[in-house]
Image 1 (cartoon, rainbow, N blue to C red):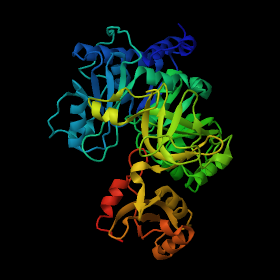
Image 2: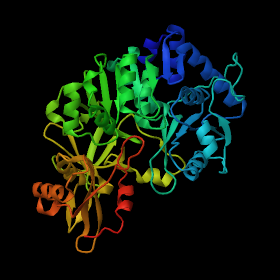
Image 3: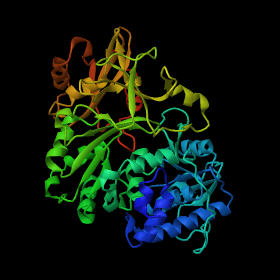
Image 4: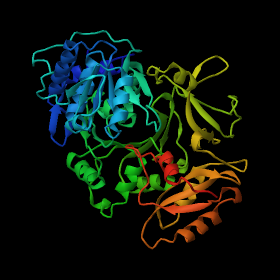
Length: 508
């Protein structure tokens, strides 16, 4: 069957598609990284060798294969080879501490864990529950011979494809199990995105779902993925120009850093056709700047790794809706509920819950947490709680207010930090900012602002006064503190727990 026919079928797997691309376009480059490149024919052969090597070591169907490394060809090949073996790929963040990595490997119940050189050294003192293997698909002794073929296994849509670990800040992060059916939805819904001839810039880590929703469709449709490794705004533009990039997925802070480069406009980005963003709030002003100066369609996606429902905002077509995250995708359904689990009337604010064909199987080994993440409607249909608070406008576009856990309740009033951040960010001396709630003996909680100054001359007291003058009486910041850089995750989310820890002892 041809790749085109497979992509029009009801269900296919990524390893099947890569096999067909290896036959139809064997010399097309599948993946670039800073060490070299690999064609579809070479990728297909290496996936077979990885899969056969895993099966030879006893890795069974449905068993996790843990992978700890920085973005590279080797990491991508092992990830894809594990899937072909019938296993479940479990990429783990190398930026976690050694005890956290060890705990996630144990939680995955993997038989083997692949480590790049840096992480093998970092974990040398840890007691791993899985056999460590070198993350080197070019000549490692675990790799099956060049003529090896893995045992072919029938894949059911509900079989696990990968485990993504949440960015938990306490205890062991939860492992989110995503199925082949969920990944098929990510592949098949991109028919109009032009991935078959894409050159996609991959600028976020392979352990993040943000990355996989562009990396996997690129390979599924037969395009080329460019792995950047550690993000650098200027290097991104240089490589995008060199490779004549057409597609990218960037988180908002990456767009911010790229657009802030003084010489941004000298780079030739005319080949770009499809730019996307997700994972963190994307300010209307930044979206407008990207629309004005960077060629190609700009689409913002709102969703979560667990699934639920997704929204899309075609910012190019709807510049009047840049303050929203768009409308639910076809086949995706979003409801808004109150604290008692009842749906709220149209136009009112509520907690976001969603359902779609792309939903997680559950949290790995955590049935109680899986049930806690669910909400069921009157017909007992399963929805996933997104953890966000929002409302729909009169045209059905979703406006996000904030993360539910970040809501500040001060003197009985609900305060949404994003409202305050939007005002603070407008001050010309503020390069970046965040607002969190801190304990208050008078109000229970009170909002405190943290900002990155544009210069050493920034007047913190003056910025605080200016911001509070724009805010309602119940919203005003109790304090404003400068910081060199906001703490962020690898995909650009502000780590507000870290900010609260930094502000510990602040009272107002």
